[in-house]
Image (cartoon, rainbow, N blue to C red):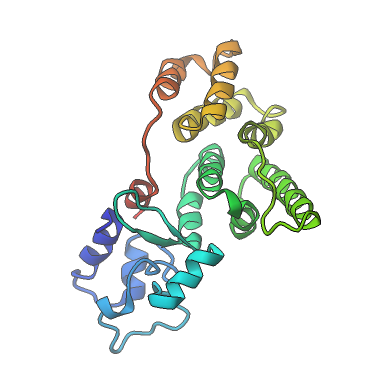
Length: 239
């Protein structure tokens, strides 16, 4: 069982049995907190579960996987997670630079869902992040229109390095500390992608910023040995 789902089961052993209270204790949104748990695994008698969502089974799960509302994040086992839960986890990251790096990681792991992911994410609480989101949305909408013109079901792929450039562009006009933080989180979360790795390495090698220097060796290590951070691990940390 996924580590974050194990955390949910541990919470159910707490003194209170109110599902809404348990979700809040874990720092989650009660409406979507239990999307990774089957209703039959819970004692729902006497619970107020209005507007609370749980996992799907059978044909419902197949349909959810096909339309992209549920994603299989497992490597050696099936771990089905609602896309909204993953976006909720991304939004819990403290810095806008990491939120954007994680958002791009989610897009690259699910390349046909770019527009859906950005649309579901909605607005961010930070200025530069919102500029990035608007540019990403325009890029994916353009790709969808181009695909529609040629009769395809999904947008044409957007090059990895172009997606990174879209994210970096607004920050290039911002504070040096923001730019260095963005580069750090992209090397942490995106180094496994060959083209992005090459792009980030080039940016790092050319940079003489004093804001880069404290984390330069760590970023070089990320690029040489890309961290294997899975969504399962990120979910476990968030909950």
